[in-house]
Structures are given as structure tokens and as C-alpha cells.
Length: 286
Image (cartoon, rainbow, N blue to C red; front, side):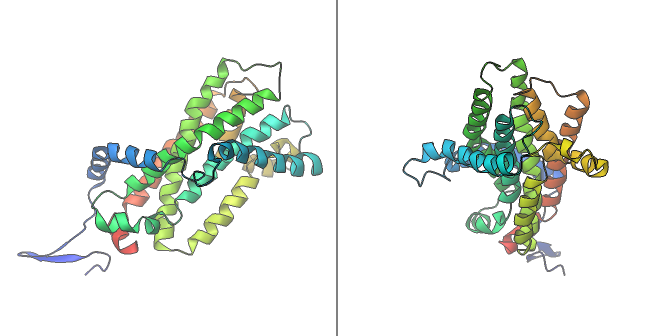
């Protein structure tokens, strides 16, 4: 008898009380609950700063303070700004959009246990929790993203944005879809092995500092192997495409778009499938 299932007695023997549906059925269940997913996400959006009296101010101030700190640390003390046009804008876009990616990645940590009440009370596909969290993040990240763009253009006064800035919209959506796939993975891993939460935190910090957020990969031109290895980092590819379409007025190549699309859809499909494989466990794990 599989200990991962709860069984009930029927005339022909035993059957699972909470069986895992086929993947196609699972997708259908998620589609049927799409209005609930969106409604829950909207009800929880922007809550992270609403406890503060000036919560709207902090939505703008937090990214500015982040950039001020890292700008001084890396741009002034470590001099990573050398050779980078509009380093302040480069930093704004890098920090804000990388925070979006790492935030999505870490949001899955402990998601199943923190949703214990809903999981144990209602029958629904648990992937709805991840999709809701992703939509909530997309709403929360909208204002910081706009602030990052405005300030990046402000510091290069006299060079107005071109039509290429419109490409940041699909890139913004792709970043969140990519992050949704990562959230599926961390949600299942931390539900089955809570100690993984510590590794998620370490991985997030390492990924942030190894994605060209505060420096250009040209600094590693003397070590081609490291430079090439870091160039395969999906976060670096996303940040480069966002900077190119905005402050550098360049359209990414077809190859870059294809690479980003593969990372986006691949992350979502692999993450969702991996999460679904443990669907029957989540009531017990919560």
C-alpha cells in the first residue's frame, strides 16, 4: 500500500481518496478556476507595503535606496562602472528586474505550508496557488518596473526612448512566466524537504551577484571560459535584453528571443509537470 495516499474502502477494494488526476485533466481544472486565481491574486497584491503609513512612497523609495547602495558599493568603491554607458540606468534596470526574478524563485519556498488552511479545507489543483502568487507578483512589480525605466531614462537626459522600449512589455511578461516555473520547483522541493529553504536563500543571493546586475561581463574577457559560462545564465540574458530595448535602443536578435522563449516555456512546462507529480502529497505535506 502506497503511504503517500489516503485510501477509502469500496466494493472492489481500495482506491485513493485524493488521487492525482491526469495531466490534461489537471490543466482543465486550472482553467476552470482561472477567475478564482486572478481574484485571489488581486486581493493580495500590494500587501507587502500596506502596513506602512506611506506604503505608496515605499513602493518607489525601496528600489531607489537599493540602487543608491549598490551604486556606491560597486560603482564607486569597486569601480565596476567603467566602460558601461549610463551605469546608473544599467544599475536601476539590473537590480529591479533581477529582484523580480529572484523574488519569484524564492516565493515558492514554503508556499505549500503557508497555504495549509486552504489546502486542507478545499479541493482544488494546488498549482492554482503558484499561478495566483505569480499574478500577484506581476501586479506588485509593475510600479517598481515603471520607476526603474523612468529613472534610467532620466539620467540620460537628452536621449529620449525610442520605439524599441515597447519590447520591454513582452520581456516583463516572460520574466514572470519564467519565474512561475521556478516557483513550481521550489514549492514542491520545500514542501517535501523543508531544509531546502536555506539553500534557496543562498542560491538566490549567489544568482543575484552572478548575473551581471552590477557589472558587465566584459570584465571577464581575460577568462573566456567564465565569460561564456555566465553568458548562458538566463537571468543575464533577460537583463541584457531589457537594457538593450530600453536605454540602448537595440532590438535583441532572433537568436536571443528564441533562447528567452525556450527558457520561459521550458521553465513553466517542466516546473508545472514536476509540481503536478506530487499533487496527491500536498494535503499531507501541508
